[in-house]
Amino acid sequence: MQLKTVLKGVGILALGLALTACGSSSAGSTPEAIKEKGKLVVATSPDYAPFEFQTLIDGKNQVVGADISLAQDIADELGVELEVSTMSFDNVLTSVAGGKADLALAGLSKTPEREEVVTFSDSYYENGRVLLVRAEDKESLKDLESFKGKKVAAQKGTLEEQLAKEQVASAELVSLQAMGEAINELVAGKVDAVAIDEAVALGYVSQNNKLAISEAALKTQETVGTAVAMQKDNKELQEVVNKVIAKVKKDGSYDKYLEEASKYTVVEE
Ligand code: ARG
Image: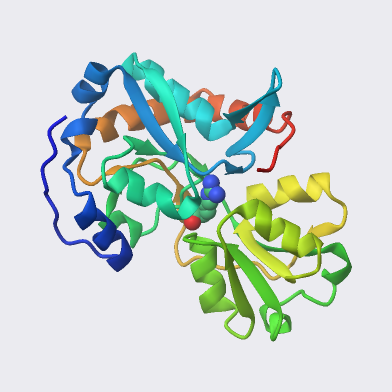
């Protein structure tokens, strides 16, 4: 693979610095290049059921979830093997922007800020954003004002982290690297809420009756869909990914993947 430094207009400073360190063009991730190397490398953070998480299969930890099934469909479309590369969420976008991974599937919200450093596919899922609380606090924490002086946790680098900072400014923001860590802190009473995507929160609530979703939902300006990220301006790969997304949305496969994912037991690291 030939590495060329083609850096332009990087909007996010931290990501910009990371890119300078390992700058590359999308040349290694065109559909042809992926076919040549025989594998599609997908970056993810497997702590976000039902999208991506770990489970035990035949006694071994495996990464599964609706996004992984979608990634497999993309690999199949390209006729290559799927290689799932796991990392903490705050490294997922850097990995794909720097060319270490071909794609990122991580329940990723397609935001204008991120679009300055990566290119997104069409969205394949619409999520809401909520505040997960202990069931016993659901009544007292029902509007954003009631979170004043409370501790609100969020996963580092997520949209929810940013929204919590902006919309629950009177609370203390606790940024944590793994989602499982944030949930543990909530259950243990060390934080009072977790800012999180609705579909993921619903999974936790259905498995733990000590948790509930607050009526004080976080707002996003416009509808921010969930999409696949790739290196900026990798139009050819974007076309392939969009084709697969159109299919799984139309024939109901993605909904089926979500349903299948909910049958697995989540193993936290
Ligand atoms: N939707 C959020 C975002 O893109 C959170 C995604 C977290 N994903 C994960 N695999 N932990 O900012």
